[in-house]
Image 1 (spheres, protein in one colour):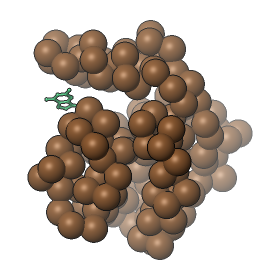
Image 2: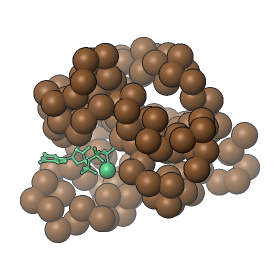
Image 3: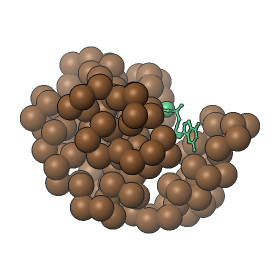
Image 4: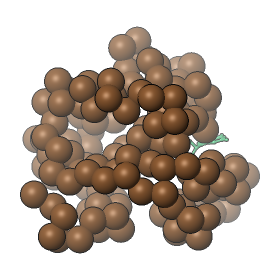
Length: 137
Ligand code: GTP
Ligand code: MG
């Protein structure tokens, strides 16, 4: 697919890293096709992360993701899903490669700076969860 979906998570947004992260995204060759700041309710965050509902960290994850604004965006690039996961690095910032977004701006496995879709199918589902057709350039 030629797009992926991302969120700058509440801690990274609160810590004023959004500008630097967006600059890395743009310099990495991605185009922003849609973007907005959203404060999710607990229920909305729970629906977004429904795939993880049986994992032990689900409640903490959903509580955190609804604790403050997230900056949601659709990013266009050839091979977007895989290339974006390369740019953000491993889930746990401690394991992420040097120079990746999670290495630079993540502070724990939960507060790992950004979300990135893990498949073309999920990128489409996640983009549609946040954005109407009217909001997509
Ligand atoms: P996302 O791009 O956010 O989906 O991350 P991911 O695809 O690299 O990881 P995954 O989908 O497996 O997990 C979703 C999110 O749950 C992660 O980004 C973490 O914030 C959180 N998470 C994953 N594993 C753990 C864990 O062991 N403990 C805690 N507290 N959070 C976790
Ligand atoms: Mg994931």
